[in-house]
Length: 310
Image 1 (cartoon, rainbow, N blue to C red):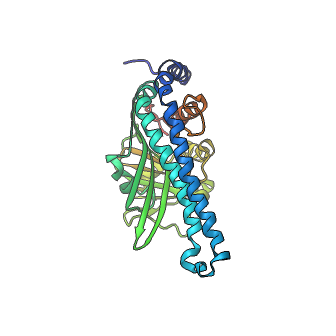
Image 2: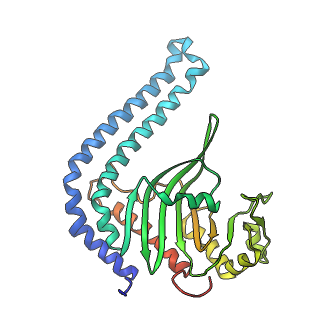
Image 3: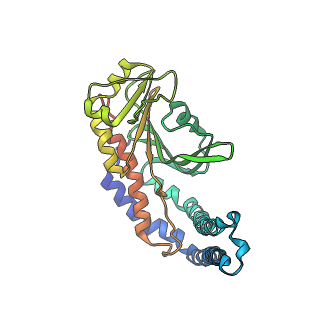
């Protein structure tokens, strides 16, 4: 079996690959970036100008101040942001298709895709995030790292009921193979006052650690297994992970030999190709690299590649 790369080796390989392999691939797209920025600017500016006109219209045309028209200026501002985002993401995905095989090669057995994730049912089945009926996926990484199978999924999950639609989760979901074998289902969620279980089959379980109990709710169909899996060291790592990833809340599920972690964030993670920076601006690519590494480190963090307890 090949020797695993250290984080220092991966970082050096990525930096070398950026200069020697990535920059030559993306340099020819600099002219297209400028054209895309110019088009995005014109469209966004048009919506902003329209918003200003609609805001001032009631001063000159009184009948335009009806309730139906009062939201139009804000709608135009939203469209201005969405149009810029649309142009940026389209350009970004074109570049990612060119370079992500090179990026993933620096991490070993890892592959990137976007837009489709057939394994998404596990997020619904595990109840690691609230109930949803619509999802849009962005970046997806799948592969093996340190002999642990993993999926890293960036997505936005929504629930629509009638005319109402709300985002129930946006961020990163990580699915990891466990080194412990179990046939139970346990969920750890941020503490709630009523301790409402997401499923009738999962009962609220009180653990002995008072501090952990104040911060989290545990629901399980096997209290013995839950106590076996949620060790004191796991509790410490889960608490520390919020700080490490800069999130206020974190949820996870032990779901039939899988550990699924939900990291909510409004940030566009793994983002590159800013329209206002040169195409070969290295900082944005290095940030993307560090974001991928921070997820891979979960395997070390939870010792998933070792045949020992959590």
